[in-house]
Image (tube, rainbow over all chains, first blue to last red):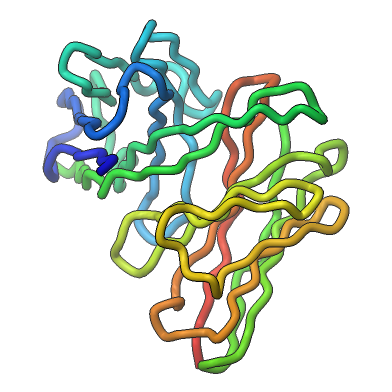
Length: 127
Length: 113
């Protein structure tokens, strides 16, 4: 069974650092991009960024560039999302998701979509 | 970058059907999208991938009651024989091959009456 298992809930103070994880199993971890999604309390889904665990190629949404760092350790099939200095506004649920890919011949491009989701990690930042 | 527009809410009676719409922005009407369901307090779940032709591929275990269709820039998710467990938020998602990044619509909250 394909699974993404995320690390547990975190409670932190403003200014602290944090690294949360997402461990893949049941598939070839280095063959699929892994993305991160933020959901602030009562709000919708926001696409943050994506990493290819095979070569660590990483892309960020402009909204999150410079605010977070996405990394991966393929030796243990785990992707990470980290902050160097948390803010209260980082309080949210964070999901990781595997991206499957499909070649759309009519448009001559690869389309990536989230086909497996982790259960989420709650991050609370409060003084 | 493509923008996905969804209405904020929809409602229908138990056992009836509801059709949700996700509209792609100008210049992106041929894009493929994915539909995801998020039940209250749970993680999102992938439902299907849907092309502009109306062809769709569902995820593993997604009930037959869920189907997709397309018309121009609009992508639809139809839920037939609505059940209380279908009460959830539904999000559409697409991919921008130019920026190599994903985009979500704002989500539609479905209420089963």
